[in-house]
Image (cartoon, rainbow, N blue to C red; front, top):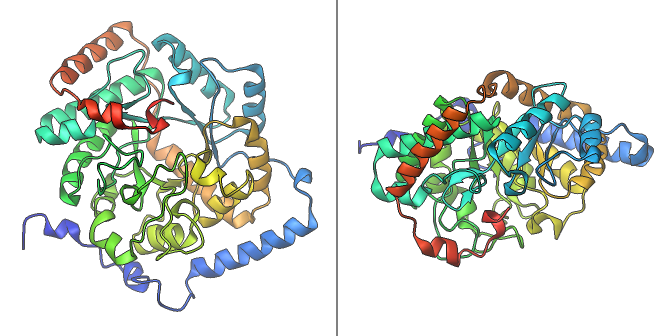
Length: 412
């Protein structure tokens, strides 16, 4: 057997055999439950107006407008009690301010909130204004030095935990099918070969997690097959399920024990689901990711529902209902936080079994994956930044990734 070949097999569990293809009769437990749940939802939608329901924010992950909580945001978050929050560059002005903001968010929450960030290294570094950026995935992969990759993951974890974060939306596990396309992934992928992604992204994630920061693999099932940028429109890929099993999902299955969460791609795969993009697809989330591949206990969430791929086709309310019905535990709203109450009221319309199942996974994630922040230390902060600066100096970035990448992903 060739070296590493065993990692390229999907485990042949009873679940895997039962759902090996989507061609069999639609009699799975999830098919029956989803059908029953959607019928219940239709009945409840007809019988009760949306405004009559208590909003349910427990399955939302929300963004903030600026570096401080506004009174309006604080009141909204106290009322909705979202599962968590995501911060961007617009929220980060200084180390001390950022730590105060994450502490304030914890103070608003009755349960430990998820406090997340996109901190991949390279051009997707939200703390760029206050700390050196860690090397990007392509720069680290080109050197093939597992020790340096471990350093990058560990230092990223140290930095984030000092600032009060507990979940990092990284690593990217997308295979770099189209490195020259404007699909939002330029300068963010670990490579085109699944084994290379397993080795390098796995090492980075391993050391991030050793520093008590949870990681999130993205963008399932194959964001790298997009030919356009989902921030602007909905990409479409002709890939089949067999093609994804042969290549794109291999890093997910190989790294499954070390993956804390999975983020879905806003990409449609009409040969798998002709009706919905992956992020809103019961076929891809419930039947493929959870039933066939076995990610039934993992936290699963959408990418930002404010991206053009979704806003161009679905309204606020409809999008979150579809997201949770499809098998996501969290619906992420990064920018239009003023629509969060509409989203929360829409979630309240969903069947109880569906929302309760998601809440159970979120609670399990809180108990097992989220850690308290480090005690703030100016010396620790300075030492971490110095180590990051030294590491980054060893890995000059390809300037083409910055100048040619037209995606707004690096600007948020």
